[in-house]
Length: 437
Image 1 (spheres, helix red, strand yellow):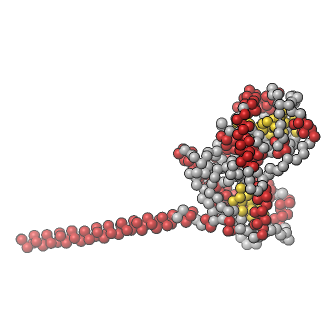
Image 2: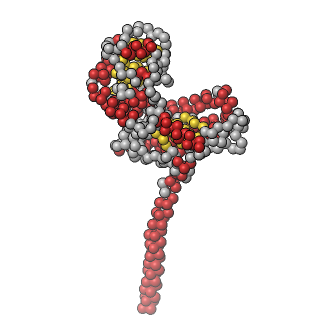
């Protein structure tokens, strides 16, 4: 696969975060909320995805903050809870490595993670701080707190991760996995979709590029080759396409501007999910045991795709190299080779095996934070101490200094005594020589 540089993806996320944060602050309703005098709130819930300036709402309303990490775990989430991410075992958010990395993978992971930490701390967060000061100045009495300090005071983080598909990692009580919380029992489908799915003799393929990338924005030649590929299939195809018309539409293809994705994937006639590899869609495909053909474009989509391929329930294609023949061949392989469906059902069983529905667990912890007006006891004090204390570098420094002094002082004393002795010997020899003369 040929992907966008990991460093470019980081820059893209930071840029998107800053742009969308300011866009939200400019909204009249948000401005009114910031300037409100009489509003009272028991809790602020904020998206954790590159919108750190929103943490100032917790200070504005003097209430605890819960964040939601929709992209899964990231180093900065660990740090906010008092954990130092072990780069030897835990790959960066953008990387698809396992916890059994080679030397080269560990070296690259450490380099990318260090770059992320340094640039975030000294370049990205100061820009977020300026945004917070720009829109909250005058609405909060006294000096505004630092965004980094607000991040350390987050009470709880709900993480879009699940033990069945994500790597084991060090955790804290304040980090709650709620992967799959958005997946509910399927609802009744619209009549046209229900009939289309029920009457598909050879099954249905569902195709969606998600909510951020519109199918209507695809290059015309790509749209044409996709339609050509679909026209060669015996299966029916449902395509989330944001226009009412698409040109030459094969008789086995239905297009709609909006699709109830979860309800469609739950239908037993769905044989394949063609997706961009977004985390929510991937989780829905996993939950319903549907094999996937992933065509990632940017960000975490590449990571999600590689993980899905590695687990055996998906295949992948590079969008820039997409051809009709490749698309048809991969679709037929995924549908006709039973190993893909078998793997999809195996991971689906693990994903569904929960003591409580993730949404119910998230609800409990949100109410817990409200009841207790925050929950600093759910995180380690490591979130508040400097790095040299966390790593015991000060203790190690004292030990090394003590060891050095334990060697150096006796050595200096022995050397000085030796010099005195040599000086005495020289004086004695000189005196004896004078006597002989």
